[in-house]
Image 1 (cartoon, rainbow, N blue to C red):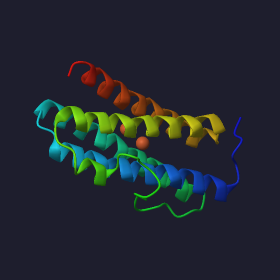
Image 2 (spheres, rainbow, N blue to C red):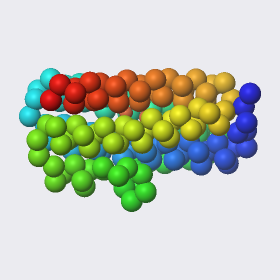
Image 3 (cartoon, rainbow, N blue to C red):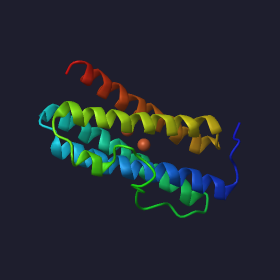
Length: 147
Ligand SMILES: [Fe+2]
Ligand SMILES: [Fe+2]
């Protein structure tokens, strides 16, 4: 059952996720630039693409609700290991550890959103997004285990 149906609440909730995804993209860009391992760079580039798709889908949902989608992140409030932190890191292990923290945050925010419950079309976007975020986190954890 959808519990969040008020259009302005839908807009503000989804805009929070959109900002989180913009910040995640900025962190991914910084991470990809600094990683040494080419296979890691390639995998993170794919994950970055998932975040872009999340933004597109969530932005469309905001417009459908009559709202204006956010067009940028909010580095101050979203990720603890954002692009500024990433820019100071060296070494694949340190970089992936920071990205693990970021993906823990994306997982928890998407989980909270899925639990709140929205209309079916939004819920589908959120559940698919959560599945992506879980996959991102799992890959980073497995890769760190081998480092
Ligand atoms: Fe996302
Ligand atoms: Fe992610």
